[in-house]
View 1 (cartoon, rainbow, N blue to C red):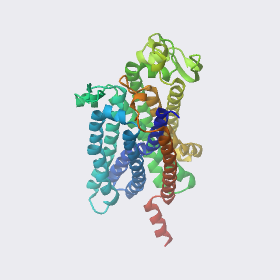
View 2 (view 1 turned 180 degrees about the vertical axis):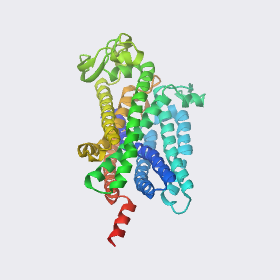
View 3 (view 1 turned 30 degrees about the vertical axis):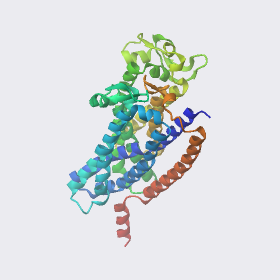
View 4 (view 1 turned 90 degrees about the vertical axis):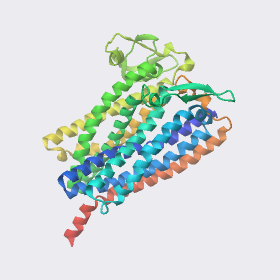
Length: 449
């Protein structure tokens, strides 16, 4: 099999599995700040127990994220050695900043967050919660900065080493950090993470309410998470629109693939659904004529670059980009509708009597996870055939000494290990959810006595 394809599959496998966990920890980190802040303000012990319960879930997702993320670091050196040489000066600084400003901050205060309830004061513990949340956010910042540089390189120049091979070298660190797409992509990614955390809390709280367990705990958790989810879902629309404008300016071939826009220079439609016939260069589906042009320029008649403006070897795979993008949009709109319904009934005071809606809330936890995954697929596959946009092709970044058989063997091994890890994660998560918050159980034992 093709070495480049196998190397891409392996990296896609590892990063897709890893990306289950950071969004949950980043999202839960913010909600922990809300919950413990409510405890400091009201001194209601239920908010403290709420924080303690979700801290356990946070710790589980954090540990799984660390374990699954380490593997990716090694792949840069094994499967993508030429790419690592090419971007080493760029990625070295960004990943070093991630380690210093994010990982050590998050992991350092995590010990206080987990074990400091009776060892430090409430304000110090709340400060630790804030630092853990901030650390998880910083981690996203530096990873997205590094990835955004691959999408829209800035602040570099090319140098040739003694062996005659080119590599990128930083000339302006802040141009690297604030490259043209970094802020828009960061806001879109982070809000997606916040949604993942919020919907996890919504899902578990709805499960408790349906089962008649921990009712007051579940009601308060659901209120906090549902309002947060609604706000984040609306914000995601804003950041998505802003990111689309950046893509249209710096990666027009990706935007054209996202909507199956083939005409070289014509107004672009926006599809509600469809299927791309790449052979005949057309899309079968339902579209709003000129809607993409209007979203990007404010004019339905404004022409946008289509795929025919690019040579075939410089076009991304169209149908998979089209489908992942539209799946992300569909899930995003569904989460807006679902959270809006929840907020509507919450304001009416009848939310907890809507069992049909609570039943929808339970599986809704999968929505942000799937949307985050297919969103990254849209971004990364849409960048092809470039691994660093306009500078280095993906086919040029692979290692020359690693064989396809070696990569295939490692894919099989990773798949087996990740399956075991995922089963362990689901088992532990299920165990913690079924065990429930400690205060409620302690109270029931006290009353029985």
